[in-house]
Structures are given as C-alpha cells and as structure tokens.
Length: 385
Length: 160
Image (tube, rainbow over all chains, first blue to last red; front, side, top):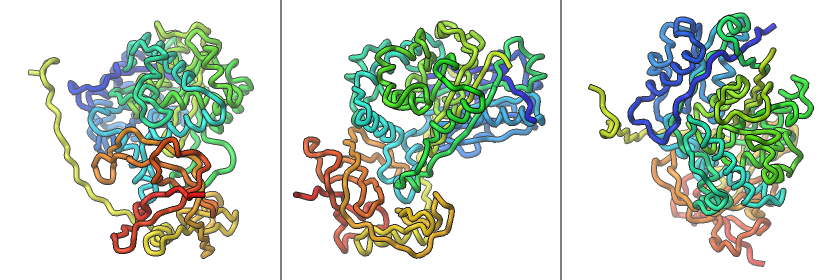
C-alpha cells in the first residue's frame, strides 16, 4: 500500500525572456530556496532530490552534475528526468513516487529552463524521428498549427475564439506576479499579430521563457508535521502515445490526453469533471491546444470548446476556471512549465494565489502536462484527504 | 565584485559543431534506398494486423511482432490531407543553419494507404486545397541522391 503524499512547499522564479544575471544552477537555486522557505524547511530536511530540464535547449548534458550545489543534492539520492514538455510533471511524479514508496519522507523536485541560452525550435525539431521527419519539422508551431486547422475544419470554430482565450490568458497573467508576458491584450491585438503558419499567429504561441520551479513533497505523517495547509496529491497518471516513427499510421483508440484524464477521473470517482473539479491548470503550448483539448480532457462535449470561449466558462470568475495563472501561452520555461501547473494548482487549493485566486472555492484541482512524443501527465490535488 | 544590473553581463558563446551518424537499419533503409535508386515508395505489411508500416520497420508498433518480407508498393500518387504555408524560418538541428520553408508543406495520403509529409510544388494559396491530387517528383538521376527524403523534390499537382 502506497503512502499518501502531500505538497508542503512550492516555489518559482519570476519568469523572464532573459536572465544573464544568473547561471543555470543559480536560477534553479532561486526556486529551491523559495520552495524551502514556503515549507519552512532547510536542505537538511530533504531526503532525496529529483530534477529535470530539456537538455538540448541549453546544450548541456547531465546538468544534474553541475546543478548539485544549487539544488542541494550533494551526497543525497535522486535522479534527473527529461521527458520534453512533460518534464516538470514527470519530475513531480517521480518525487510523488519517492515519497509514496515509503523510502523517503521529504523529497525536493526541481525543474528549470533557460531558453535564452539556446534555440528552442532546433531542440524540439531534434525530437522528430531523425530519419524521416526531422528535415521538414517546424517544432511546436507546426504541430499546433495543425491542431488549429483540424479543429477549425471539424467544429466551425473561428479565429476570434482563439483570440478570446488568449485574452483570457493574458488577464490571468497580468494578475500573476510570476508570469512572463503581461500584455494587456485586446481581441484585435491577437488577431493582428504576425502569421506564422495558418491559423497560428505569434500571439497564439507560448513565449520562450527563462525560469525554474520547485516542490517540496512529503509523506502523510511528515506533511502534517510540516504544514497546516498540506495539498494532497490524490492521484497522478502518465500516458504515452505514438512514437514519431509511427506517426504515419493511424492508431486506433484514444489519445494520451483522453486516456490520462479518463483514468484519473475513473480512479477517483469523478463523473462530471467540470462540476467536480474546481480549477484546472492545463498545459497549452498554443491557445489552439487549449481550444481543441477541452473536449479531450472530457471537460465539454466534442466541438463545444469554442462555445465555452464565447461564454467565458473558463474565465477566472467563470463556472470552470482554466489557467487562472495565465497558462503556458504567457509563461513557458519548458522544463519547468509542467511543474508550474502543479505549483499554481497547489496555490489555488491553499487559497494562496493572491490576485489570480479563482472566485469558485477550490477543494479539487486538476493539472496536465503534454509533450515529448505526445505524452500526457495528469494530476489531481485536493484540500482534504 | 559582482556585476551590476545595467552592465552587460558576460555570456559564453558556444559555436557547436558536433556531427552524428544514424543507422537507418535494414527495413527503414530499404524504404529510403527504393526512393533514391528506384523512385518508388515501399512499405511492409504486418503479418498480424495487416497494417502497412511506412517507412518500413522491423517490428509492428501496434502488435509488437516481427514483420516478414511482405513488401508493398504504395504508388507515387496521393491526396493532400492537410497543408501549411510556413511564414517563418526555423533553425535545423541537423545542420545548425536557418531553414526557410519556401514551399508549402503537406500531409499526403498515398494511394497505397500510407501517409507521409513532404513539400508541394504549387505555391499559390488560391490553388491549394485539402483533397487535391498530387504525385511525387524525384531528383533526376545523376544529381546525387542522398538516401533521405530530399531525394524527392516535391509533390506536384496532377492536372485533370
């Protein structure tokens, strides 16, 4: 029987375009100190450290060796994990697993990216099958432009709907002290931004950010000693999808987004996610992903996502708030991005999100991560056990 | 003394040149060799689920069984399922150089059943549509086929 696990401390850096004032290790250390301060612990209390980033964005292999001083892993057990866009969530899951195993009481999870130090699209194109698709790949922009085209053709959605969700994201980001892009956008701003590849415009896409995030995770007994407001990690799921090699085949069945969310709902008795979950922090590298994926997470019926955008269902004050933090389109230090979803969801559960705290009372929060070769990670955080 | 904000912080340039060479393996390799030498697309059929693997692969990813020798010609004609005009350049991780996609990219369903990504000859947005019929144009013999997908120049529109 696995131990129950809680998040007892969260931390993140202020996310920016460039941070030449700190090196990679110092950037990680900012998030680590923030999370330890939040938990009111020191490195002495930490039993194991898990970290991750996307190596090819900085061109630095086994960064965990260099990082040791900044993340406090010296003479401690731990591991480094790289799983593309899901990295921050996979690192978090590894920390949950460490604590749930009963082998470690308090585990630190750290994730970062310093995208000002390399070329993100070159890094992402190297994810494509090197023998078949790399030569023509256009990174996340190409992938999400296709998501947008498919969604428009299938549902009758218009470009305005993407702009509505982008403005919603910006409103959240403007209230979030840590967010990267705070642009005070209008629908027109979004619709007039530069076309990258139809229907993808510059403002539909996430920025390249520099930032780090950290979590302190503890077993049930220690969690109750450490804090009065533990955020319980009720469940977590990781699902992989096709390899890029088999991209040309149509796989039968669900996508990884559909399966991960279905599994976590089923295992926790959730039958109406948008009613039973109070807030979601989802991983949308492009606003087209958010539009197209509401239905894949079973929040709404197929083709209903753009109507939700019109009605403001997922606004901060809406019936089912999604990404009150401003989400990935506002802030994307890739390795850390999926952990930021969990950090932000934990703040919502604690009621500590400040100006971007949603109006609906939060007892249950749902987070996702997406990336790599179409992996999805889903987590469910709760206020009480 | 620490550097102050407002001063130019020092950054270390890393002009990496780090070549790799990837084995294609005998199955994927045959698909590439057939394009280069014989200007045709071949995949292989899974003995269990009968799916066509294109590029050919040693093991069916759906059934996890080893394929036999049931090679299938897919034809050089197909139908455009999706296309995109790329209005930005990307840094190519295989060359370290900026790549400008000056021709539209397309997802093409070959008449033999498999799907592949390549470029279209037609650049006029008014003449591009989902469902248009296209055929592969291969690099002429003697122009140095490389054994990769650039041995296909592009797909051109089949005039009715």
